[in-house]
Length: 354
Ligand SMILES: *Cc1c(COP(=O)(O)O)cnc(C)c1O
Image (cartoon, rainbow, N blue to C red; front, side, top):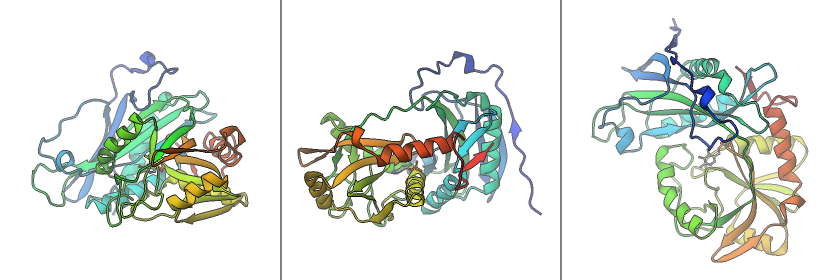
């Protein structure tokens, strides 16, 4: 018999919602009133609960703090016409969370725990989903070791949590990115395909160096030769070369973005030529020089599509045609945005109403 896991709910005494300035929402700064937690103990999930968002006690010895035993996800919900939450592809995030967990030797989060947690949190904090165009509720599920031992070994106990943060309209100003040819985000055989906490800490320093040189983001290259483009910050990257939408093929050093898949699926459904293959730095630079690279953009949950205006390589900036001339990125952005907010039909079955 499968035991149904019940979510215990402890509500906040007083909501913080009235104090929130929805016209000024720095990304990820303000979280909703509640958070979801579940414990994995003795090989099983239990103690599903919603508690007020706030501090929580953890052991100073937990390998989550010392050895990066921590994986996470990011997804969005938009407010639908009848105040329902339109959650975008939540089960794809669940599947990826478990692929990350497997690579880090962590417990799988059962479908029931994930879905019940998501439903319970959204039900309680539904009024936090912003309604203004462009805004949404960013949802952050994460899983970490709850062991209390300094030794390095596969953990036995885990905590799974979901927190959520209202985010304002994301104005994706075109960015300058730098092709990184010294530092490495991920290597073949490593953990790049996993949304593992440790992947991000190491990326902050090279990103900071690029920021200091006037670039907003990095274009990561492969760790072996720095000869092929991989992805950008926390986004996958795409190019329009001639009339083809081109993106680096997935590998174990590239994170399989759900936005990446969504953009490719929409493009293919509209008859656009799509290629997932190696994109060498050489091809990219030549294409920028001879005008064959017409558009470049990052794709990820936070911005959906972030246009790139210039790409720096070995001290030279190569400019893309003015973004006003872009046709592919704005069109796919609009298609996806309408679908996500329930304005357009959902032919791919990507929306879960909660
Ligand atoms: C999260 C992430 C992405 C984008 O994934 P989405 O599912 O589209 O949000 C791309 N690259 C990295 C490294 C990421 O962490």
